[in-house]
Length: 220
Image (cartoon, one colour):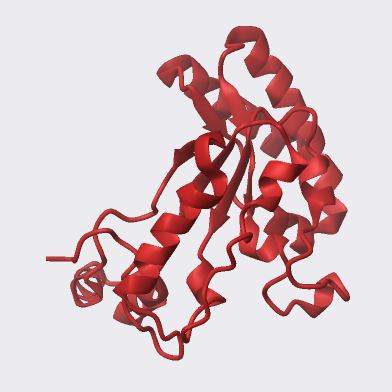
């Protein structure tokens, strides 16, 4: 609702378009988490998105514009009492529809190892509902699956392979692009050492631990 924020946001988006001429442009990451946390501000953001969408299309009609949605949360796979009695595997489609018709592509993020672990497999139809709800292209803006166990999350490299197969198997030719968040696993000890040198609390590096092994190569 802050006019200064709106102006800055709009100007930056237009600067990106004019400077880099991107084919794809995401204007928000995992926006449904913001919609859950700040329902009073949702319409303000949607109106800003629509305003920016119109301005960009006037200059660069070929740019594919979107916001991403956190798929696991959209499916109510995490306990969140503030959202009410939402049922797992029943996506909150209204949160995506709120941005239509100005979504050029339906884009999600997903980290299913937080849910499907301890030998629980990703369902064969976990991602396919996307294809039944839109005829537009779909994409993965960020995501990954751990190749090693992390605390109570008991997974292995074979589970990561299953995830890497699930995405193209379930979304197929409709998948426009797919970003695995990390190419290489993280070396948490190295991060902690650098943070200490920078005068930061090295314990902050441990917050990255849950994502340390989602790369496609080992840290070495």
